[in-house]
Every structure is written in C-alpha cells, then in structure tokens.
Image (cartoon, rainbow over the protein chains, first blue to last red):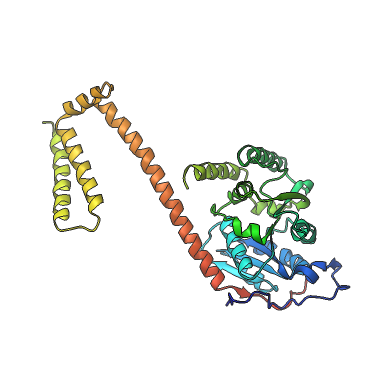
Length: 256
Length: 117
C-alpha cells in the first residue's frame, strides 16, 4: 500500500556509487536522479514489458508502471522489477494512465517526470539527456523528437501520418514542433502540476501540446531514437487511429 | 379522424394522463415531468389537428406542416446528441478519476532487485 505522506523513495534501488556501471549502462542518473520519476503506461504489454523495464531500471531508480486494466500478465511482469505498480481496475486509456502516474509521482515529491512508452521503442539511456534542460531550469517541458533524432524501421504510412499530425499541431496548437505523439517527454514539477490531461485516450498527446501553449510553458525538443519493430507495430496505434484522434480533439473543442 | 389519429391519440392520451397522475402524487423530478406533459400535449394537438401544424409552418415561411416537424426533429436530434455526448464525457472523466484514485491508493512496490536477464 502506498504511504501518501512519504516524500522520498524508500524503494529497493539505493543510489549507487559514482564509478559504478551496471551491464555497461552508465548510472549517472542514479546519483542525482532521486527526484526523477519515469511514468510508464502499460496496457497488455506482457510480451515487451520485461525487456523495457529491465533497461529502464538499470538507468533510473524511480519507475512507475501504470497498468491500465490489462487482461494479460502485465502487472505480474512489472512486479518482478523494482518499480512502483499502479493498477487501473478498468481500461481507461493511455492519457488517463499517464495522468495517474504523474499524480503519483507528484505526490511522492518528483521534481522531474518523464513519460516513457512500455513497448520498448524508446531508449532508456536517453533519459538523462532528455531531463537535462528541465533540471537546469531552462525549460518546463522537453519533448522527444524522432525526426530530429532517428526513427529506425518506421513504415512509410506511419511516417506520413506523423507528418500530417505535425501539420495539425502547427495549425491547431500553434506550436512549432518537429514531432508529435512521441511518448518520450520530460516535465518539470511545475509543468506537471499545471497540465491536466482530460482526454483519456490517445488524443492526450495533442492535448498536452495544446496546454503547453495555453499555459505559456517553455519547451524544447531533443533528438531521441524511436525503434520500430514487428512487436511495437503490432501493438501500436493503427493508421485509422489518427482519424479517431482528430475526431476526439474536434469534439473536445466543441464540448468541454 | 383517421385510424392513425385514433391509435396515436389514444397512446398519447394514456401517456398524458399517466404523467398528470404522477405529477399529482408528487414526483421528485417535477421539471422533467412537466416537459414530458408539454411534449405529449403538443403531439396530441398536432396529430388531432394537422391543419394547425400547417398554419404554424406557413407562419414560419415553411410550406408544409410535415416539413416543420422534420426540421424540428433534426434540430432536436443534434441538440440531444451533443447533450448525451457531453454527459458521456463527464461520466467517463468521473470513472477515470475514480480508477486513478484506486490505483494510487493501492500502489505496490515490485521486487527489490531486477530479475536476471
């Protein structure tokens, strides 16, 4: 049971010595990363979650997995790792899972909150670089951009839809970004408190960009790597999902 | 009167009487009940005297009584669709807030050390 009054992690991953390396992965963030929380929304991710969490736990000590009402063994796999596990009793959507994780991290005193996809398409070692501008207080939000970095194995249809999504964001959110719907981001504590995701499903990514602009939050994009594989593509959003997201956003603007 | 007018009129009259009786016994949703009385009464009058609807349509600059009914139904459909979508969104947000609260209250810590790769 979570003790809401505890501000610092009492988890099993104690900070490691400065010179230590684990499986060849630098652990600098473990030295200073006590206030960095990584939120991982997961829905039926049992085939991919073990590998994702293994890499993530080597790089970060405060990992929060939000099992969004999975019907497979996602929760069981998460509990094999030194992570916090929160379970939605029903499937509420990725946006809702992220907000739950963010609320939990804020309650535990997180100073920087990173969002990270569960399907293994992100690189955990990039988190340190991602949180840099937030830790230095230069910006409130850091957005990962696969088009500034690399997107290996991206199918042409996905590339085209993402480019349309960028156009949409520039038109409606009036935010000049090079990537949209990238799950790798970092938010300062203040930004995380000011942003409230109300779209429970996939439209939350656009809603987040809308709120960055509406609240005048300082933001920057950082190049990141996104790896597409058969597994991530099988689980990821379908192409027609873009239409659904557009519909949700338009209706959301009409009806609050 | 046509057979349709007899049938529809009877059904509407029963609904109207039932609603008035409920109102007299003191229903908790008085406003909704009054709205239903108004709807049944309007429908009853319109079906009993179609010429009245035609005159109403002409007064609005619409040719036929059937057309004004169609337009009103179209407007009512749009309004109720927005109303129910809005309610569904609010309900969804409440359920999400509840799920989130339960998830945070029951947060668990995983294994002390990561499993061997």
